[in-house]
Image (cartoon, rainbow, N blue to C red; front, side, top):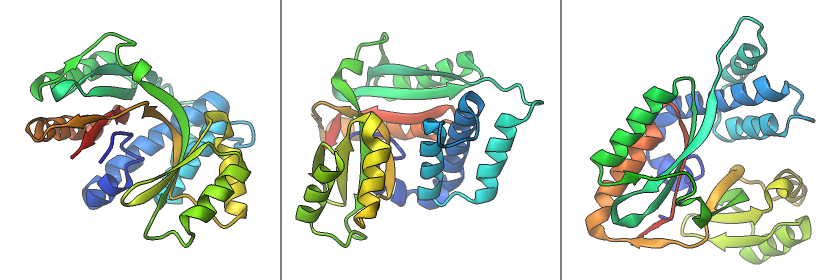
Length: 242
């Protein structure tokens, strides 16, 4: 299992789907709310909202939940303000970790995140301490079990659509694009019969660091604690578990 975001790690998400579905919906609702609050409800001009709605559909989020999040964001009576930022630090064994936050109480979130890092053998760092190890990329993930196409067809199709690369993992195909090209590549792939299971813009590590058996248990516990926090939207890391 190599490091990337909570939403994007399909195998990890499936294993915990039943117990985590409500929490995933809460995080997606927050993303929809922030996107609609900032850019309105027109998905033709609000790209972030369009991507959030795609994420909601990919996770089978009920339409009523989506409508409530948009309505709350556009309602004049709601004064909720979310602050968005990232924490950076190191997990056990020096694994680089980036944590994307959306919170209405920075002090509460900071205390919780610092506690998790300390509890599980990690340490928070200064801004920029690990960000240089990651690159922001558009990502389209396809479950290998559900995919009806050969890898050669996927590679040919993504290159024609303007994608950058194709990576094959044990349980999924991962198509990479430039962030600004993600939506157009996704639509062109769909026209060719290639549909992604999960899409989004993520921080992808430039390289991965092997995680020893000794450190794996603490690192996984740290990642799960972070991912379970309501104010944490995504967690990225550069570990490769042996």
